Image (cartoon, rainbow, N blue to C red; front, side):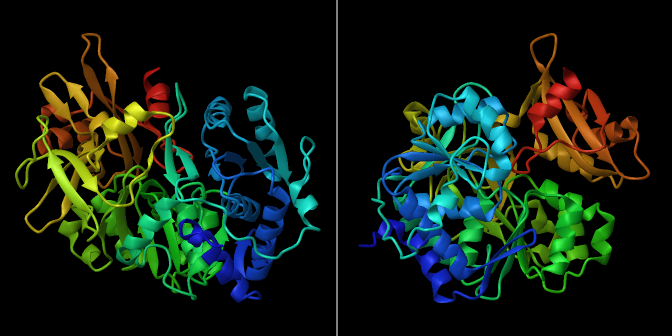
Length: 507
């Protein structure tokens, strides 16, 4: 009997099976039909049945491959949860995550066998199977080749864990964000407000170059369930990405702003055929208005901004039509109709219109809690409100303006420096392609402001940028140090890695 909590996976598989001969998934030179993918999932589920049970969690050590997607579907179909540490984390951090979820089983994608062996050497003993031939573990895909392809009804109960996404893990206890299968029911209720963010029907061709363990996977699911095609890339490289946009006649994609900037800075953009492109959704990190305006001008009126959080779900959106108004690029759009917001001061009371405070939201699609961290969950979700940790204000037209992450504010002598604001000021200079701002301890116990800048040609001087900041934002915002770098380091999901940047530039 199909459980309502698990309808999404079964709906995806049914959509694949209903049009068995259509192309569904592309990875390098491999092209899988809907029937091939659905059969792989069901055969794998039959083979894992008994090894994987509801309420347990399976660790998936894999990248953006068809095998990884099939494994996630099969495990969820059996009612178990998945955690897939993103590749940008260290071996030690990924081992800590495997231990943290008390993995009942580890599935290792064959191309990731070498790092997976290191990860499992550092983790507590756990059974592991290979998704393909490896030197270390039995090949469960080969074993499943003789299994039946007849559908398995979903085993999940609403309260069972469907996924644990770890957003930390570099130090201390990993911060796992937990979703139950009931989360799908809540998501379905607001999905109508998210139309266009990922797919718009059977003609969609989605390019995914960000980890399928995060937003890329959710958008891929919606595309496959809607009859579209998903093109997977192992990771983001601007030249390869642009080549796929034209060659595969891509209609939809999702990028974090730093990745979008790298497209704009790549010489191949001007000769890339973008005529099929209908939607570029960006989000997941602060976006610079000047560079977004450049993207609209050079890529076309296809950009949408989506602001949300893994903990909170969808919060607000800026439509392609609104991207035609430059003043709105300073915002993250208006709250989606299913989201309620409150902007709260330090005293816990709501602030007035135009005033800054911490953004609290009720979305209906919030997480079910932090894995094994009830105290942190209670601090983050208060009476149904998710404390986002973002400093924001709302204007009279209802548009939401993000100022900074509370934790990213730099406390300097005389006040607070909001890093996102300073980054936007620096990027207003035509000689700056990207900028990242962070704080570092000073000798007197306060913090000082550091900035890393990726220059254009001709490059500005540090003095020019300091004068610009002083004029636009005031002396308090002028960085103590401005470092010119060739590229900003990114995390595994495509955000600017300020921890690594701080370590590299300040020691």
